[in-house]
Image (tube, rainbow, N blue to C red; front, side):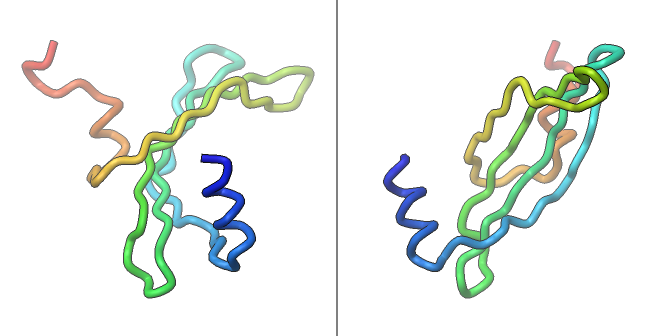
Length: 91
């Protein structure tokens, strides 16, 4: 994993991902869950890798600090709400 990130950064291919479905959900008075989808595109513009991302942020002394972050590569998800809200009949 580290080697592939190093190769990407030093090959000139490193580009900023497209961010979609950015959502912030309060989970406590001073803590939020941030959810979004990132899409990294190839040089030709076609989607190369789609990733669901989540992080937990907490307010410490007036500054937000990330406590946790996870990225999961997925083939396709229509929106972040598909993973955040239970579907009918699923519980």
